[in-house]
Length: 145
Image (cartoon, rainbow, N blue to C red; front, side, top):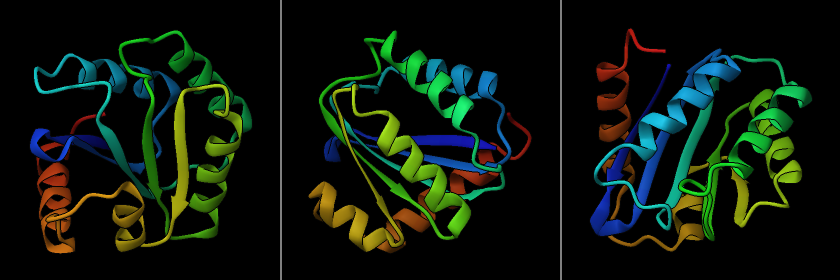
């Protein structure tokens, strides 16, 4: 399951990933986000990968990064904070961070919302706001992807 929420006034895109999305679903998801009228490729990204159940797979991560390299409308100089909560998701986040050095993204991996939002330098956005948005994403995307 994947979903997102754009907060234009914070110049922030929240992405949530759960379960075991396939690489083709990830490619499709990028298209869905960039087609949103509120999308701006300069907005920072807070990506919660804490509920991904995939085994870390270097080939898929490299394929995804190669796809992003070809997608100018998505990649621009911005920050991306990845929220993790298990050794498995830390490995996925760290692999993504390491293999994406050619992208104009500044990526960091965090185990807490507070650390991620501080690094992104977003003020006036609480953990409660974040949890509400993630809950809405999960509800709205229960049967998607």
